[in-house]
Amino acid sequence: FALAGSTGITGRMRPEYAKALDKDGNCNINVLLKALDWVANNIKKYNIRILNISIGIKNSSENYNLLKVAIDNIVNSNVLIITSVGNKNTNDTEEIYLPAALPEVLSVGSINDISVKNIDQYQAAPFSSNWKDANGVQKPDLLAPGNSILATQSNVLYNPLDSNSTNMNVSYVSSTGTSNSAAVVSGLAAILMQQYPSYNNFSIQSMLLKKCTKINASMPAQGAGFIYLNQ
Figure 1: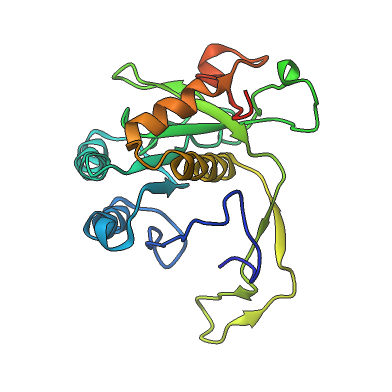
Figure 2 (figure 1 turned 90 degrees about the horizontal axis):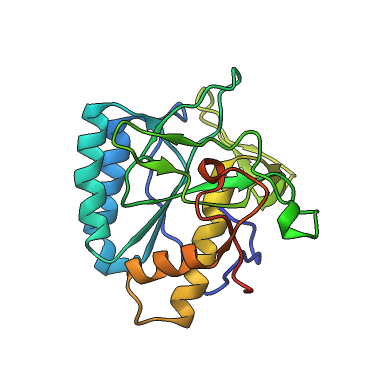
């Protein structure tokens, strides 16, 4: 629900939405699989090229296997899947999330501060997770802005306990987290797809990774580095 008349990184993309959270705002495997099934069945209808999943569920062998089948089906239909790597818990432990742990998806973490002018001084955000799963998959794949991002928000506040919606006057909100970083990379991927319409999802993913530059962070924390298209 973007503010009317507002545009994001790319103004020529038409977003479609699939419900991936339950009525309480939580993500579970059943609801997520239904959302992925809707995407798979509507790829041709809506010409879906990018799937942004800025949510995650805890990793387990059952969840992994179920999601891998659904994700592979979409990826093999020429759709680039971009997801947030996840945010560290309050006790600073690393939680492995799905679908971020799947090697087929592009998992995005956050840099700490974009007010620094020198890219060499950029650092990984302290809330941005990094981990290696039991299969040896290291995430994140890359980093993008995700700290104090100004974004539009709905002017309607939904209260599940009240059938009447409450209007809000605030149209923008400052948001922090790797979910914002995944959205940024999704927008950059859309720009590249507009510039290179014949490229498939694997080529765009490879191009995004090649457009990264190393920053002042460990290899596990930054992956390929900070996404920087102007290089």
